[in-house]
Length: 314
Image (cartoon, rainbow, N blue to C red; front, side, top):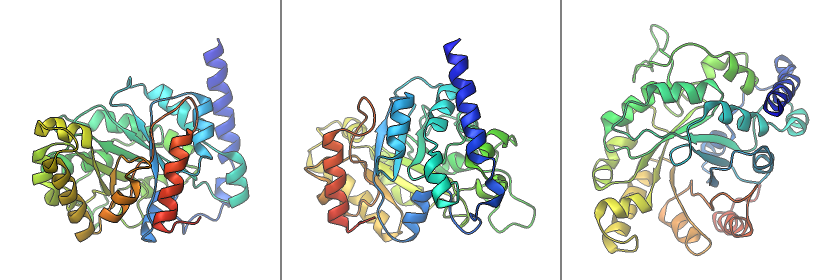
């Protein structure tokens, strides 16, 4: 009974938040604030979370982070719980003050399927409840990256110059459009920067030697929005500790390619190495991991160092 009451409350909250969407002046902005920031050539800073409580959702929405990676790779995959968490991130006061439905902190979901798995049904479930991006773990080649992008895209209109990779996402946008507060959700729900007006971010995670070897082909696949290096799995795949020179050289290679192709690039960091990673070219680092609710002191310190070192003042 309590669970039903919570869902009813969240549904009412969402409806009241987005009921006036048509009067908001949001046609010329990205509803995905992280994309808007990256287009200004500014870095973005995030956090992994596996805490799906309403308290955490509310705290993260005003945390000062640009994005969060909602981890459903190493936590149970539960679209209903994800939907409630996303609604919990909706900040009605901020929306009313700014006059559009852009969220201060962008929710991106890491799905449980690796690159070699078919992600289509998982992607559909995640996007249909309103996520603004998806991280695909363990992507190892361009074919896997293209399949991931295709799963995120609706089929494009005949005559479109951006039909490829051909979208395979099924058409059921009602819940996501409600959450985004956007009457033109279907047009906005495409992968950036392949579609300059798109508000979905497709993040490919490189976590193996094969992924490093194919990093250039992965990041230049149309529709790929960002690359994220997973140091722990990379070192395990290579069979050496994370501080081994071969692992660090592999990370540096991916960072250099991201700079060459102007592709946003992320990696996990802490207060000791975040400045080094920013200098290396990582403009999308995470600055911590989940706590009980919101961000812990260590995360806050790392975020402060990252902002100061990169020149971000907003």
